[in-house]
Structure formats: structure tokens, C-alpha cells
Image (cartoon, rainbow, N blue to C red; front, side, top):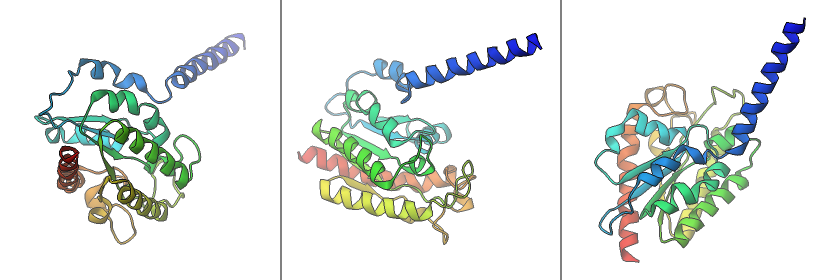
Length: 233
């Protein structure tokens, strides 16, 4: 019994330490700190673009690294993240890198409740704040639609499809209002359920290589437009 109690105490202590460490870097600022420090400041002729996002953005460079290779594209996606976490690291992982354009793809994990319950208004607030920060620092903004999702494999029964549709309407309206570029992945990828079809995703949330192949020309067109706007300012 004594050995069992000691083992239980050890497990509780280790879990508390792990939670403490996670809580101290809730936004995972440490993830890209060293990579950011190694980046030289861009030249005026460099069309540097930062991709800010969650696992969908991270998965892009993991699955299709050639999309980023040889370009001034910097991937700052972290799996599982929500918009409040991205907002916390926005200065470090976007503004301090001095890009001309930031591509923001975020919101699906908020709807899933990854960091607690979140309303659409809360998601909007964080997207608005990131947009305002970028524009205040001379960075053009590409606001991406959230990808279709009929169900979350890790949180079944949440029925996110209608929330995604509504959030995208709000993102598009805000982009128009604030002079940002709206990047519409949703329309090109949605199926009859307002979900992500099997041929584009293994789990109904994260794109596969075929999914990223659809996304690539859409975001490239949005980036090109944003760069023209940057040069016009």
C-alpha cells in the first residue's frame, strides 16, 4: 500500500509539473523563438509572407514542404491552437519578422472548444485584433475562410458546420470593411453536408495533399493581391 501511495503521489506531482509548464507558455511562444532569432531582416525587395495558423497551416509545410521552399514564405502554424493563443504570439511570430503580408487561417479550434468555450464574437474579436496589429505595422492582411468541417473526430456531436458558415460570412464582411484580402478556401472545398469531403481530408478537418493542392492557387492569388496593395501604399 505504501508503494502504491508513493507511486500515486509521484504521478500527481509529475502531472502538476507538466500542467505548470504548459500554463507558463500557454501560447507556445517558445515554439518559434529560436527560428525567429535566426531570420535576418528582409530586404525591401523580399516579398516576405508569414502564414499564421493552427494544425492546418502546420500540416501544409509538413505534408507539402515544396510549397514553401525557395520562397519568402514563413510558416508559423501550431497544431491545436485557438485565436487567443495566436493573438498572444502575433508580435513575436509575425510583426517582429517584418513581412509585407500575413495570411491568417484560424477559428476552427475555437469552435471545437480546444481552449474552452468560445463564441463567434470571441473569435471575431481576436481576428480583428490581429488584423489591427498587422495593419498598424504596415503589414497587409489576408484573412482566410475557415475550412469546412461537418464533425470533429476528437469532439463528436458538436455540429460545427453551420458555425463555420456563419463565421466565414463575418470574416468576409470584416475583410471588406477593413481593406484586407479575403481568401475563400471554403467555397472550393465544401461538400453537400457543408463538410470537407473524403477525397480532400482523412479526418474531415485537416486537408490531405489533394486538399492543399486546391488551397495553393487560392492563397497565391490572395497574396499577389495583398502584395499589390502593399506596394500601392
